[in-house]
Image (tube, each protein chain N blue to C red):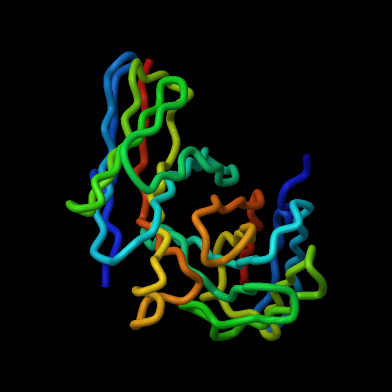
Length: 114
Length: 117
């Protein structure tokens, strides 16, 4: 049971470089999420997708773009990385967005921007 | 804005002690989620509850909707319980429709638990 799979697990970038974080879930979930986790801040929502074909901004969307490629996959793109984007990024999925179903998380991507 | 507050932020206990982590919230919710994050690891779901109490092994979670408060208890704590415990609330539709946060969930900042042998 893979659950939510994120790639890569670690990445170091230089300021101004771009990259895409990949996320896939095999639980047939409708909603998917991208969070960042910084010390002392807790998890903050970057973007989410309530269903295939829709995406919406979360609390901290600036500097990021997302693509809900299909029901399984939800990618996060940094077009021009900045040191402030150094963080641990988590992808998550849930059956239905407005429900009491638990959220399932990937293992995270540790991203450092030099 | 701190719509979900956890206490304590850090907790050190001796093996075998009874541990309580608290979560208070100020918004309307439909359910509350307790999560566990081990050092360097991912985040796993422990409980989802909307009323009363749930138990799984040595872990017990309770919620009081009227008081907007939940607790996570660990009985007979063990060093392998050392982790960050995160409380997350699922907003109800009324809160979402009247200015609630996007994405439906709000997370506390976590409680870092260290259990010494």
